[in-house]
Amino acid sequence: MKPRHPEKINKPTNPIQRKPSWIRVKLTNSTIYNDTKKIVKDNNLHTVCEEAGCPNISECWSKKHATFMIMGDTCTRACAFCNVKTGIPAPLDQNEPSRVAKATNDLSLSHVVITSVDRDDLPDGGAEHFVRTITEIRKKNPKTTIEILTPDFLRKGDVYKKVVDAKPDVFNHNIETVPSNYTKVRPGSRYFQSINLLKEVKDYNNKIFTKSGLMLGLGERNEELFQVMDDLRCAGVDFLTLGQYLQPTEKHFPIKKFIPPEDFEKFKKIAYSKGFLQVSSSPMTRSSYHAGDDFSKLKVKREKNLI
Image 1 (tube, rainbow, N blue to C red):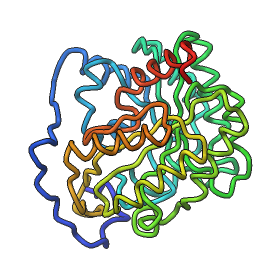
Image 2: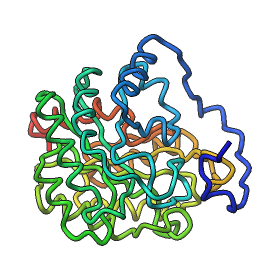
Image 3: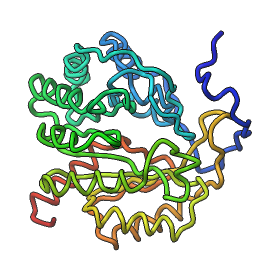
């Protein structure tokens, strides 16, 4: 049997630590879970829930919530934390946007999250494919709000503008970790490229909510985390997510620390004090976890002229 991640064969082995009592993955084999799985399969789609090994998949799929991952299942980068395979991607599937729209309708999603692999091989990094996906979802699901979680479009110029012009409701790009970790954890990415992308999106259209997130437990110091919060606020980011990094395999970056729930609560209060409009902070928080509920809270705040 071929290994799932052949590019990680020669990486050092990092034994996976036993999880503390506050890390609990909910398992289910409910009818709704199986229905969600069938809809994803029947529409021939990838989800970050499966490809990245999200610990919340059982809970979310049992509510018919799935996060679609477009542009294939193969990434052009090899981040040390990520379980998505790395390699040479296949050509874009031109019918994928319409299938995502159909699956959104099949699942009756009121809020859909669309992410992707990195596609450094494409001239626009896949920006046009995001546009087509947003457009198709709007056609079939006019009442569904759309959240996109994009790559950094490194060295692709201002292609992000065409994505913003498609008017997603939330533009998310994850900063993932503190700058000092980038060469070890995100060697193919650049911290200030990510910060600048978020700032440029907000400068280009300040009506769109912007969002970013970090994984904790990668060896970051608290003062580094607080500096990233400040950098994100300077970029105009509205919504912050903080969650515990969980090591997918022994070939991935090791967990340096399990952050206790009370620290996540402390970080949440600090983030709010810095001016974020919405903060989700807990060990099991992920970018798309309860994303629809969180977006609804933001909408209510805007409608009440609280933001």
